Figure: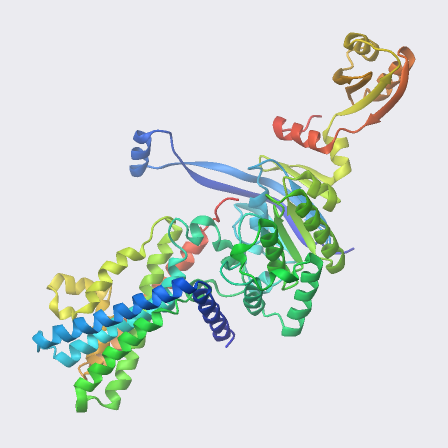
Length: 337
Length: 263
């Protein structure tokens, strides 16, 4: 058995944040006496990641994704539980460890703004003690994959967001990390730049075998890159497994798309579908096409009844789109049984 | 050795940075030259009127000023820019960019202290060394090799003390990330311009033991004039090491407090 690269066990992180009521009076009061509340950012989550895996970390804003990532990168101490990355306790920040990981943040830059990126890269090469030959080889490879030859000699200040992000990726990968933490790498990028970076990340992961944990709010990133997702919400782990399984496990419903020979009212269709309190809901009705939302368990029975009682021309059963599933979970904050 | 190489890289980057904005560069150069000019002029005027102050001869007062300017310039050259980048509203601790410093496989304190250089401070350094040179000329035959060595030891102790105090003030940023604590220090450092003997007794105690500007400037200047006895030299070295140790501990404690700014 291959040993896991990342092992997280009952990891918890509680922040102590000052509490402040609105208004000037409260502000003045807080100068003298501050009150604190504890916020549980991460609550006892456990998972493991094998070498070379590309794992998507998803969850709404404030779910605890970045906190978890920062603990694994050694930036934060956990309040409870255990985490080991390649056998290291990340928060000890041993140099042997830091040399083998990298963190790329979509909203923070590690580039020096007033000089060409090549100069920043050289300093990073020195900081990470990359041998000159390896440095050049890695740089050439990354530059080619990201198609950014022409950027090397211009000051970073003049770059577009997408161009800067390419530089951030090169900066993060020059020392050939074994584990890469990517926090919202496509944040704010246009669609085609997102797609390009995705292609790059997939290709780089395949070539180098780097273990990647990615957080993103763009489901397209996760769908394209991550065979496995970990969903956290309110600091708790809700799901860990294949992306496809997420819909099956977490969305307790399916969509039935119907095309009917002649027009039927919503009531007629629902009457045909429902039986014994099995729930069905019309989502859309347009030009003889109807989309029904039905509970997963009742899907076979409802499908059979629809085919028997209505003049069906076409019928298909689908999983709901992943965005809809995620949205439902984010809003309801729990997984329905 | 590796760290020296890194420092070399940081300096090269700093020069590139300065040269990136041509207009900025020329204006800063002009500003520094003006500073240098008015500084020298001020000294000439001062010493055309005064001969001795509380036993300090003209030459040793000049040496004191030289030390003050040199230390200030060295601070402006590297300690200041690096440590000040941590604090303030757009400082690295406030914005969370300090994450990248923590992620590097390099000693955090080293990186936090030596990353950024301000090459234009070299002009201020020239001024400081020039004034020191003038002091040496004034001292004439009284300057011996032993005095010079003592001076260098005292200056190193002074620089270490200055660094330690700035580090300690900067470490407070982990408790209050928006505030530039080094401003507090600036006000006190102004006092290092004059011999601490000039100040009233209680202030002298503060300036010797709490913010030891005496160690930073008075002792090196005395050493240059042969007025610093070995115990004073050893004392200032001890003070420097003690401050350095305490400041390092404070910085480490602060680091543990650091929870990077939210995404």
